[in-house]
Image (cartoon, rainbow, N blue to C red; front, top):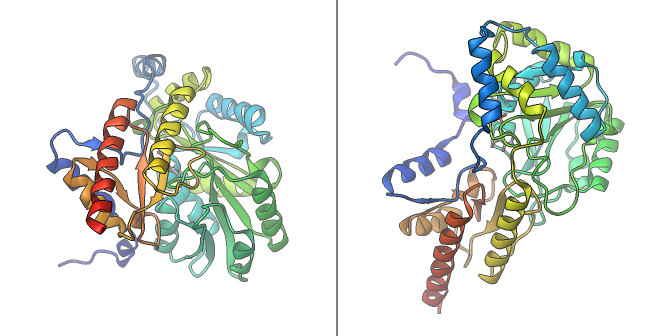
Length: 377
Ligand code: PLP
């Protein structure tokens, strides 16, 4: 066997592959595992993409993105997030996740440390470790809100950044402004970056989304078009922050992606001219139903103020895999929490699915929990 990099051992996608494998085996499963919004890309955005092709906007763009798109992003950041940056301080990337890899390459050297919450979006830890940095995890269990004191206690002289995600995947938690300000003060005291992944900013049902980049100038704000505009497959995101870090990301872009898709960028300019795609009320109704039903089943629901996820503890001291297997036997797909966490007792349910699917899935879970309860007695 010829060599495959050891780096790959940091990419444990086995839990998601397993979910995918099970999906394939089931006929018409009720899929409460998906991390995508139920809507499809709206027609006016698709039309802009088609026009871009017809008008031959099919060549490379500047590495950091089309100026018109970066201007639109600046306007949005100023108006909605109170973040004031110049267009040169924005870099358009082919999806937030690829952007994160470029950002890590720009700010982390081997041996450096980054503070990551546990649970969290898997690439935060995996990409850092893969490039030779160390992810120092701080548990947010059981409330899923960040433990500010624990964050400060895990800072060493190798710490370069703290990465935060609010509204959060997988817990749905919306961090409070007080916590974010407290974490920013810590970052300032220790001279480190704050990375803020705000991809779910449009999905908030309780509390308010607060962009810490509005207060702490060494924040690198990351966002994208996947969730708010139902554009997951177009692969487009952006990074905004201090000029030196954006310059570094742009330099890396010149040697890696060259430029994000010209077609997707034209579609995104159109997207930004209109309100976001997701129907907030619909998600709010789904969220209320899920929280109410799971609570009635005797599960403790924390977080779930935003995004479209609930991260709940498997009942009767079962492990995540045991519970997910039982659900799969009844045709419902969930994600085992260990995909996001070092702890193995939690399960992620996504209400990105339609209301109809959700109701069916919740009925089945209710039955399952009743049966499990009966068998315990
Ligand atoms: N950030 C978080 C927290 C996510 O949950 C996801 C997708 O599930 C992404 C980023 C993906 O963003 P993109 O599609 O722009 O790579």
